[in-house]
Length: 297
Length: 342
Image (cartoon, rainbow over all chains, first blue to last red; front, top):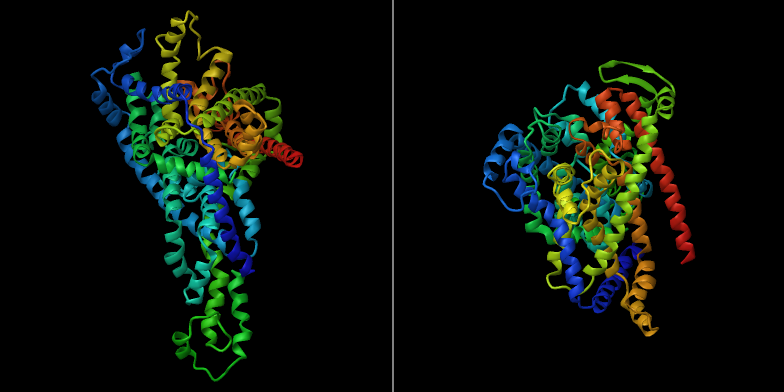
């Protein structure tokens, strides 16, 4: 059993590297038409966001007129201020930062532990449990919200942040993602060697698994943060405008809480800004994470 | 919890060997080696206990939370779907048998929501995946600033459903909206995106397409980069042009990935909720004046939290689950067939 363990990653890795080199060799240089079409795609990707900022800098009355504004006006900060104070975006940003940060830390930690166990340790029912984890990735959140709502009502937790934190502390995706990464990135010899040295499993996790998993943990952290920031269905059921997350506040804006289109756009902009900044800083890592997660498919 | 006990009962091998050794002293000196039977039994016992129990300790935080908040609710939802549970009176939950399901099957709005989910699902998924495939092909060329292009294509993914929909509502507004203004520019009459049947379905789908095309393109791109180049070399030796290479090398090689994205997109489309809710504005849960974009997910929210019938909402949730199971089985059969034919 150890022999196959040890040889598997060895046989696996050079093959993958060879593939990548060969793949890179076939890449053709892009011509002008490629750049033109890509520019069109890029415009469609970015234009709605740029226009959000334009609309957020105008007035409600101007947005009802034809033609729609194509350049910035002078009301951006005034509208943002209104969204921040009156639409509860201020509270919401604080709440969502706290919720998303908590969820990210716990998801990354517990996914790494469980992913390591699934990737490298032998235990009964591991196959069945892994299948269960993968299978439930396909179950929509709708299948959980009615009982969750009733339980939270029973506990008297309505409108408290733990209602949206607790159910999302771990994700099946995270566990699967870390498992896939550790299967090939963590040499089994390393664990065996640590065991021979008399290290306990906890020490192995701390000194061998975490260092090896660090790049994937960072990527999973980013993906989880984006997911938690944008989570919609359960938060809008569990919370209301008295103690909103960003998505709850935006939902309130959309249903006429502050009937001013420019303020609504300012709210949408504010609620997206932290993630846009994250993309600006870590875009490469996020792209890498999505592409890495894809190969398993 | 039975495993540690089992482990404690087992270390017979270490107990009956080499009685002369001092337990603690040997530990440090030649503690480098698999626990040989000559050493302290408590150490090897600890080692075995650690080996047996730690995997369960590592997966337990995940499975406790996951079980409590995903698996158990799944079953409870089935249980509630067989009860009469009203939001206004949560304390009295009476057995209802299959009433909620019967109620659903005889409701026009239920069948309407299935139709809407299907049509919006097709309109949003098919063009999205086709465009993603083309985009991935372009991104696979050697590009200046390839990372920048990829990040730009993924930017819509950073925008939440709520933020994106609020913006698109304004872009699609009947009077003074950007999209009707552009259409007018080309001499096309303004479309009532909110009220018209197909117009609103298209508008809701376009939000999904905008948010997810770049994401899927990156997934295809990852798979394209894993295709061995000798396949292309031999294809070009056979005289295949670029389009033929794309058609006969790239697409067949991408089959598993395409199937994967189809599965994921189908799941996403079946539970579509936020886009139609916010597209509808004040009375969003109805999905338009004629329910023309009330998806199954939206219908569930409307029945559960606007009308206040949580038992019926549970029945809708389980119907959604059953539909996904059926789709899953069909897709599994297709993929098995594809694998055989390859």
